[in-house]
Picture 1 (cartoon, rainbow, N blue to C red):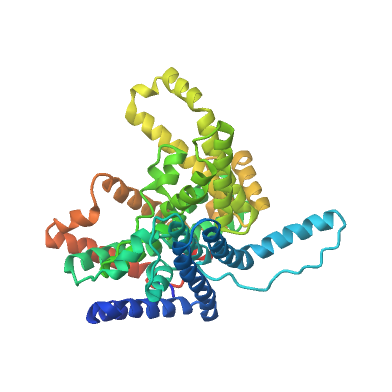
Picture 2: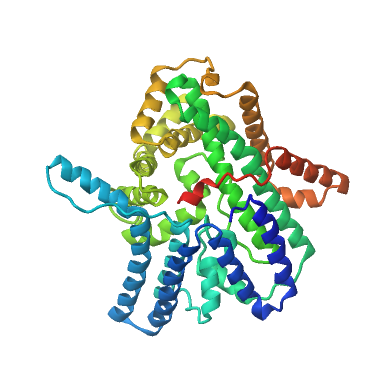
Length: 480
């Protein structure tokens, strides 16, 4: 079920009202059934995949907590194989199979294995990683196994963050399902405001930017390099507003019921370095790879070449996590290269900063760093957005070889109105985020005069309605 759908407009208030009307001891059952309905609105039969992993991990967690040594490790491996196996079959089998077939054709080998005709279950990467975090934390002794099967199933299937995160840890979620949450008018109000901001980012900003991005990236040879740069900048804000918009809706819906989800974005495009960007972007995934891959490999507490290796492994895996496509792997590898290069060039960059004297102007220095970081990230987004590696190369060539300050974006079917509107919504987003640097806008609105508050609320609502409230544009990260 899409958040931006008529079905959710009915689903959310009904579930929320019932949640507060029912006694605490059976609320878990309501949320679990509601989550099943929410997920089955996409492809009903795929709920069986969730059911298998839930049953395996539930019993594996209990058994692991009672065992020691190799026996304990065996059940961890069984759980991980089940989770990763599901992910491999549905998401990666055809990718690896096709690449092996291409290699076999080059070597004139006979490779008879055909691809699978299956659809990727929505949000599979998200709830698989959430399940794995539970079993790993139990194995490490940092989380007691959940004895209540229904509560554990709810941890995996909780509808607000089921299909696009944030990827939660058991330490943050399980205890909240056990705690009784009474109705709190202020908390409900804050949750609804956060949802409204998420809808605004998705419907008003992301979906309007998508009109320009899709037109230009759908026909990159029709426009010059400058227009492709503009479309790439627009995509950077589109994917941010699309994904963070989903997160805000999820966090807001959950907050209404008294359950807090982790923050997944912290104004990432104001980052001064690539490493800072990844501490602010998709925080739940970045921290997952840090805790369960990067640190076990040795992190940065090892020889420098191993540090670089660990960084590249994490980012290549992160790229592959996003999709079974070489473009995503290259995107991940490019971001890993940025980080490795930043480490290698740290002293040189420090000397250049002193030589130019820019270090004497801290604000200017910060703006330069933010500008450089943003452009490096945008360059990597080309591989993320392009439909193929060849198309990404074509776009990059046109940016560097056919660049002029003339905007010919109209050749791709983009109107001047769409272009101005896209620029306007980006300026609005940046203004709001600059305002939020030192304060929370929701808290600040609560202190304003009632007339001022409602002008903001009604304005946001009108924009959402005008620009297509409850359209059927899916969220970008649903495909992962």
